[in-house]
Length: 558
Image 1 (cartoon, rainbow, N blue to C red):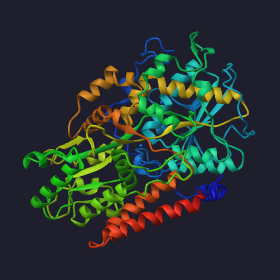
Image 2: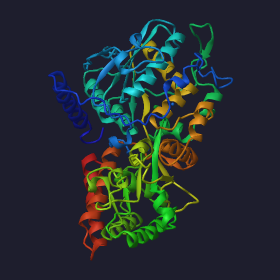
Image 3: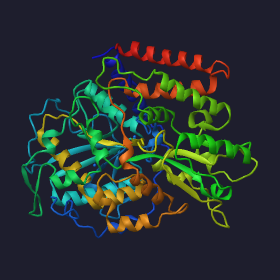
């Protein structure tokens, strides 16, 4: 274990204990402020089959963002509450009709010792409880409850107890706290960096034995399914989403994909058409269009990039330059002339007033992108999360929408080899002394990742992209996509763009220190943009790069 690994786990645990202490003492909740864009009612899916994966014949799931940026989450509920599947209502379940109870750090069913599992033991039908920690807002919990009810018709002895924590970091902190006491949930939302943390104490479960299991399980309706995925189900996954489970440098699978998000270029289509501007497909074109926009509106900021770490990491992927490695002796590889050059270029753009970022601006780019009043600074482009499309649409006025929003892939260094960061949570699992708990958690996750109806409904409700191809072919989902426009159904336009660019998706490597490296390259960009002198910027940037890498290497003992 590298320097300060244990201290990091303890620090996370202490901070989480303090946070939960405030909740226990009665600190009021901020309520649910979910950011999901609900464009299609849950009831539209109420006629779907009760059978698992019934619409898939032959069948019997990118930092933000980024891992430590809650902007990558479209679920922002601030409360922590636990829902027992035995209380979940049917397809019309809602926050008001669900039974909530206060949740403590010891409510996991896994109070037993965590041990190394001996392969994938098949589920034997016994009564077992699965605990699931996530960050879903109220409307996504409603969707989840609906499909838990469907799952329970197949497996009535498996109780799903799910808890919402507010955001991804809160899920991580809660689990870090429990791991110090030998506890953990059965499964949880995660980003790759979180799994690395859990593996510091050997708690994360590898999934190969479950994925490949040929054991046959009989469901309550008399039908059977294999414990593992069929080949048809594996082939149905959108490849880069499924591949995220193996980014840890040891060729093992630790996670299953859950509906995903990415980054999108939003632009003021009305403005672009009025002034005959070209939507930039490359960074060279972005520079040109920014210069043109400044001549039209000299007080504007042409574009905003919401996530600085994503920008840095994406540029290294687009340019084919080093960022980090999960297998190298020193994983922090980003101090190269090529990387310093793109930061110097963007620093020059910043000094010319071509862009700002969320951290520098102090708010998401949508704040100035959606402005219509002429006496305030505005932008005409914003690079942000695909899950936040509803925030990029200007407010409806009595005369209609003030402008139409267009969407496109973010600019590329080489359009022939595009790269766009992949975001959104995955599902990870924890080692348990009771193999039936592991088996039940696996079956529930398999159900969620192979149910065409769940994937389609969750995607439409959340704005995330489904992880299986068959969900995008669902008739109701296709109807939703056909409504795509630049205002009311902007989310549909964004999902269509997200699906069109899946071959460009990538996930940065995960290793001890990768989450901090993300944060640090974001801070590095911000320091260079705002502090580099106009004369001597290159020397300043070179110095900042060296300081950042030297600090990371020292802190992690590489």
